[in-house]
Length: 162
Image (tube, rainbow, N blue to C red; front, side, top):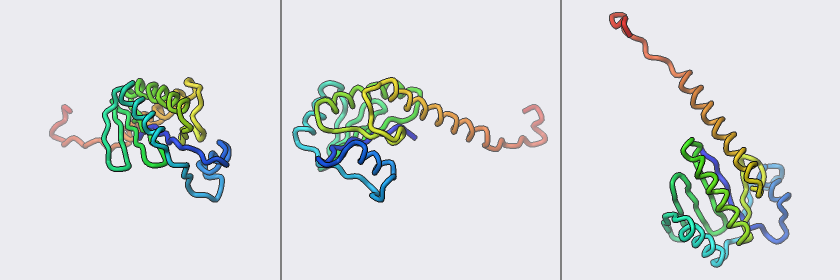
């Protein structure tokens, strides 16, 4: 379980509102497909991730993945996927993700959709962090419930001291 973001380059006639309605399932359209990312945009992202943040890069044809710590960023022809697990150790990584998203959105025409919050990522770092914290807490609660619900092994009668 983890926190995910998807970056899209909106089509000229699309608005944030109309795309939000599609991505939230409020229209008949099943999926949104933005414009293809340009070579220049991919170069900007590549330089940002490798030069500024020292991400590891793996290319799989048209698909490129970047990885650092618990962060995985996947870039296809028309979208960017970012994933960070809901782990206590990943809290610092989510701050880095929002810093990267801010740089990408200010240097390109790409906007990032937050399905957990049901809206595009804002420049409000406190709000973005709160959404992540909510998911982290919910995940921890689920894990605790699973542990509590797990049946305990019965001790044989002759091991009465256990």
